[in-house]
Image (cartoon, rainbow, N blue to C red; front, top):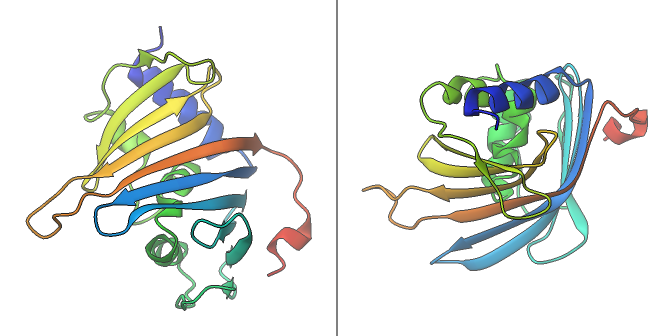
Length: 203
């Protein structure tokens, strides 16, 4: 059975070395204040730093919100009832998208770009936070890794090839934040190194 350090290396090699990455999934969150919410999402990524995140309105299947960062050029956000400050910093852009999208960029972008400022990478955390890998009891999840990052506890579910299929995240209550947030990221599809049309990042 793979040890935690071996599994983290496998994830790092797959995600941080791919030239393109595309996923589609569902994010489900729960707080005492807001109850249960869900949003569909898609991620398109191309090195060195093109990334587009589409997501639906709360509890709706339609993609109505789009956040694009295109090699430090103008950022576009369409269909959302909020504004994201235009910036040439990818890290700042993703932080803004995190704030308005229930936290969509918290998991995959830092793994694709492990040196991204302001985000914790799996490699950095693995030396002191990850526990032993456990076998999962479902057909799709073969490994489970537990970690903590920036006030949150995460369970990362992987298939036999080291592809992330689900992440359970729970924030840790503090004196400044009493309400815990629980979130489940379900990655229904994930593909690596497939050709992406230029229209994907056209804005």
